[in-house]
Image (tube, rainbow over all chains, first blue to last red; front, side, top):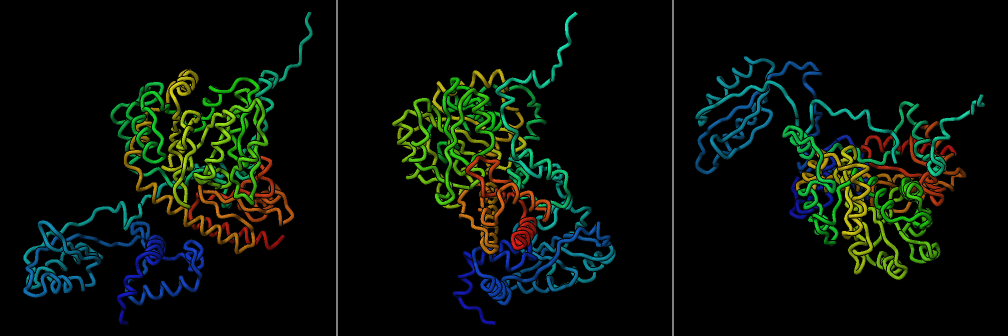
Length: 173
Length: 393
């Protein structure tokens, strides 16, 4: 789909409010969003559709407590130094690294290294193999430093241990 | 041998305390507490937990061993923050060290303000529907409460004519609370000017309860204390509970000319000594660094207000677009039920708690108070159940 300049500009304002609400909870119904934003249900639906088509909304996912779900996942963060290339800078190589399914997030960073790569695997060995066999052997990758995560306290803005407010009064003046 | 008198322990209770009616909210609270699966729109406090950096400041205060009394008026650092905050946001100048008193919430500040100024029999006017404590606090201070009903068609604003109508030679104080609990009513600068004019002409003292002032959705909030000539006849009350979600910290303040603060101090120093030091430390952090979270919470409240208002209109419950606080005050008398019947049946048949409007004064009859200080998921369920209930009538 070809995205017009005006459409991109219109993402500001109402669409940004809509996106903020969806970022908080992607499961809110269009009916509720319409009432919150003083829009019609049809308008909310069409705005969301446009945002999806323009790839402004990239995906909807659940945030899961891996421990409670008993997922045996191993997560690591890898600091990667790479050589920039003439013409493309860091982009071509970064894109190549990001495409591995083991990579869950990938950022270009300022500071002592170039890429921060988040990877996930089923076992420690699997992640280690990915680093040594795949990542390190890519031409242009100068060095890697791998850090394994031990425990998650907060995931994408959500505290793993939720605060309990059961003592809140049900009716108060 | 003397005859043994049959004495009930209630005989020990003072007459003026005995004569205070039971709070309509308390009454209702007990019914709600006994039920499960209730979605409550009856809560008069933010559902947000106090922002973390403010809680952290309280923890740090404890770590540093700040566990003693403070000066009666409150920590000088806090009073300076308050004076600056009031100057910047309400355009009223108070001297930090002599015109600011830190109290245990606006509740205490209101109580000591009334006790400091009322002679027995003085009349205290207040607009209703209003917060439940005003009338009892006036009675406890041996004053005479004079209720000025406000109307749904006026969006529950106080009209100068209505004020004049209730004035007598004994009128001494006017209590204002805009945005209002329970109606969400607000008043513009122009509207307040006309009230200020009456107060000046008839030499009334104004106690203005500004606890919901940050939660205004329709533009700039104006305090009556900022109007020309009003600073000298105003006691400005404010606190941290609503704007910074700090209800449990119990900390608020009064700003007023020296003589009035001095009078309030005489009561406060013996009744309370000082507000808790940990809460005062947290309050400093709220004023100095709490703006961003406050604005975020306000945005959330506004979205919820929109949701609830649009839902009520869809269901067919008339409700004015309240521009402040976190309450809507819809009319329900067209259902053929009175406030209490509506609230009790809604609770018993559909497990949604709202507060009957008459708990906030006679003029609240025919309405119910719905608080949107609760999560969107709860609001969605509540609206669905209220819709079912209204259709069943």
